[in-house]
Amino acid sequence: MTAQLLDGVALGQKLRAGFKLKADELAAQGVRPGLAVILVGEDAASQIYVRNKVNACAQAGIHSERYAYALDVAPQVVFDKIAELNADPKIHGILVQLPLPKHFDADAVLEAIAPTKDVDGFRAENVGALMQGQPCFIPCTPYGAMKFFEDAGINLKGKEAVVVGRSNIVGKPMAMLLMHAGATVTVCHSQTRDLKAHCLRADILVAAIGKAKMISGDMIKPGAVVIDVGINRIQEGPDAGKLCGDVDFESAREVASFITPVPGGVGPMTITMLLANTLESAERAASA
Ligand code: GUN
Image (cartoon, rainbow, N blue to C red; front, side, top):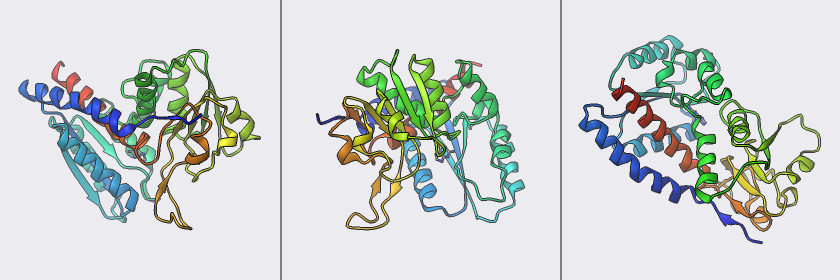
């Protein structure tokens, strides 16, 4: 079997076409949706992600503001900016690009964002709401993964889902969303014994580990749906410099029924759902 591709660029474009209409509609009511993105330091990948987010806003008719700070900025400067943005009616979403430098208390920074503008859904309050099945904002990457299932008509009820990775950004919220959708969920991580045995049981396999090509075809159940959240840069060999996922795409695609490519899978959907959350926040502000 050769897996069908779950194309994040195509699905993202399909969803984003509706976003522009919605943004213009809100603007006509006097509320142009707005997103502020805060970046600290010179991490090359973060700079690219932030640039992509800002560009995507422009295409979707969403106002955006980008605030970039040097690696050694005093945390108070960032806290002050967040307080200013919390009070700014032009801004409906605030995103602090992670990871932050070591001298920052990242949890404290995220908690400083107004809950109504936490479009990443990372604040404890929003995490709790998601856990209770009443999300205020769904974290963008797992939200994007769920859209793939919806769009491809993949029913999750009663399915065995295995999430590899337990991060706050992806693994934990992903597990919660799959569970709410009716899947039986196992979360694997660096201490898991016999990862392969767990993966081989998965009808739905989500790889969010951050290790290049760690999941190979022999770890995948025939016919499984594979969502690859990893974005890794290949260090050596003929493909050095290219991007790859946490899944070994070539061997996995021969076993899976559906698979997301890297690049062009989950990445564009993360940005798409950030736009969706920003629009939702603006809609709430417009009807408040
Ligand atoms: N760094 C990696 N992924 C994300 C994300 O979804 N949101 C933020 N703020 N930072 C990230």
